[in-house]
Length: 247
Ligand code: 1GP
Image (tube, rainbow, N blue to C red):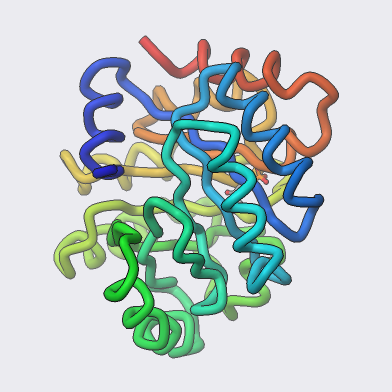
């Protein structure tokens, strides 16, 4: 499956993409697959699988396998390190945390992970990963020099550098479970410099209003994770988010 081309097609046809994030460390592989199936019924376009802590090894492999047994949409790895790779997934966000102070998250994990991606059938999708205040667990683990919420121009120059380095996607991350999503001013400033390159926004998006605000400001793809672990009716919640962002 050519995942990047598939997502582009959805953007061409429906305007925006919704991504469901599942952290293998948060539930059993069986429960992860149930959440994925419910999300697909609600209209999500792909399942992202990953997390900052504990999303590796057998648990990661089994989570990917179980999800793939239940759903047909692409599975995309969202690795916290080179340990976050699984040969069973369709694609990987091959990302560099550009605003990390730790070279490990900028390039070393990518070097360590590259051979597995090369040997497997996982499709790498190049991505600039930028962490904005408050940043949450991933900001701490990734030793990010957090981009201030009210400095859209800093996010924009990082995104521009990522684009010039050849990255196709840019991900603006507020941190999983953030109180508020990335603000529309920052999303707009980043999308303006990205042009046709794709912008993903995630962290703290819990309802239709927030999703719509991010999408209207310029996000091509919206990620939701935490809220789907919290609600009883995953299908209804995803349907609410999807209908808020799609044409
Ligand atoms: C985290 O951006 C994602 O990496 C999703 O955030 O869990 O807050 O939806 P939430």
